[in-house]
Amino acid sequence: MLPAGTCSAVYDPPRDWGDWVGRVVGHGGLPMRDGKRKLLRCSLLVLLVGAGPGFAADVTGTIELVSAGKSLRANEAEDAVVYFRPKGLTAFQAPAERAVMSTRRKQFWPRILPIAMGTTVQFPNEDVILHNAFSASTGNAFDTGVYAAGEGATHTFARPGLVKVYCNVHHSMFAHILVLDTPYFARPDAQGRFTLRNLPAGEGSLVVFHDRSSPSRQVLDPALQSEVTIRIELTTRKVPPHANKFGKPYGRPLDGNRY
Image (cartoon, rainbow, N blue to C red):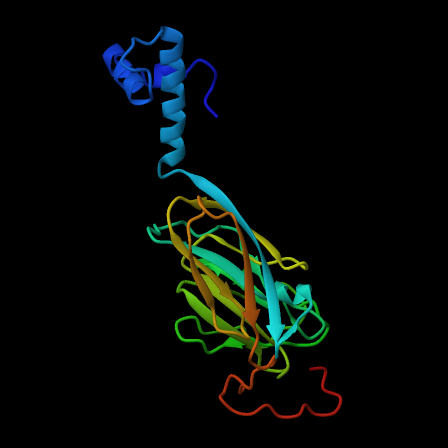
């Protein structure tokens, strides 16, 4: 918001220009009084600021999931990621704060982690058993090695793309890190609701990612549409088939193995 009384100091068009604008907006060429001229200058400045490249808007929405024609529980949408890619996407700085993907009760948490490219992710182990997080995803492969309870290793993800994360010890453990080339993303809550904040002006692609479906894409202008409902059909298995980090099938752990 502009401070009171500052419009004329910021931009003060000449009197004849103000009268010309008065004719455009319907004053019929009559001279404008100083008070009206000042009000018009303020109004035009607000419009110019609002329509400029700094314009920002929020978009809220709901993700609805279905499988085999049946609606799923709303909280299953927590495994989705919603992101917005403006047409005029510009470079942005990666956040300094680390993201976290923990191992907890023999699961990765969260199961889907959206990050901006350049973000460093830490892999703490909250279990009393050993884990070994790894990924063979092209451009973002990593291997923490076997690690016990504690802070765990870190890895910086520099390239956009989907990173499929597994545990080399436990076949049933899997997760995804979605490395994005846009800073505008969110995960739905337990009701399937999400909010994308401070989106720039102009058209862009609104994308919904879920690992059990093809990405949903639509063109959206945040200035013209601030509420959306998106329905996603889940078609693939919950635990995808995969090999261990050596490209071989998982074997059974030996009796008494703390893994």
